[in-house]
Image (cartoon, rainbow, N blue to C red; front, side, top):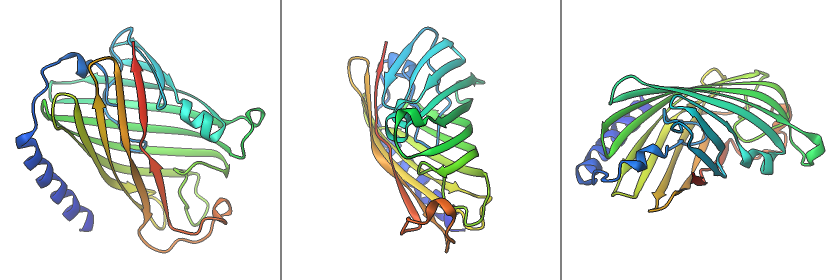
Length: 251
């Protein structure tokens, strides 16, 4: 009931904003994808032979449907190597979908304290309302083979559970030809005894060259009391804040 009310408020706000949003005049901006937040993704893929380098991902468009990638920020922050793909398909002008599959593993030789190995699958669905407004919905599954010392998306399950299911959505609104905002809401750990509310916002900028910037943050907040689990003995609060910071260059 609570999430339904919040979602309805978000829709009403963004429909109002959308009435004042300016449509894009540069089609090439749509060729450079908006990749989404760390939990809620989009159906965008890199076009054929377009590459990207940045804090969020380093990737290449094998064809219009398939992007291969790695995530540099988890390497520098969590001493983990990663390899992934995004397979997407545009069914109509107004609906498209993609599937992400990413493998991550800590490498002790690179230093750091984290000890983690997991697969992360996301099913992303994008609904285009018009050129200035899109809605993204994501169903995510994380499976942890090793979770001794992990990143922030391994939320406290209270009792051992290697799998984490999430269901979230995000509103993308272009405010003018180059800038816009994202608003995210949903649940993580919907299979846990105590699920987490996922909420976030970010501001994105596409300049006149081939750079994009995304600045914001999201929070995962426990909807109830959690119990200590082995990897969370030092965590004082039942919430985690995730930076939603991206700097990307396309070529």
